[in-house]
Image (cartoon, rainbow, N blue to C red):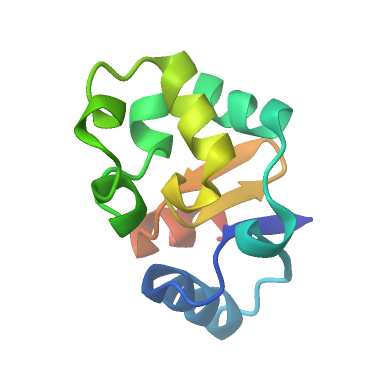
Length: 114
């Protein structure tokens, strides 16, 4: 089963939902705002992709952090930030079996769901 993780009202999520629906991809949705994210899953993603990919530095939540929280980020600190505020996780994250897709890239989706 394909699972898409993110926040329902995010514009990038809406693009991903539209793409998946248009291509008739069955999926379930995990909403960070309602369900949070567990440490083991987040650590698995970080191990697979790197915290630099998973942490959304472009988002409002990250930008509003105090400067001392934004400086000197390590993997451990990034995971702690994302667990405390899942809005800082790049969206969407899609688990398709063992495959992990991060962000909305139509070409990557086309390859993954061909």
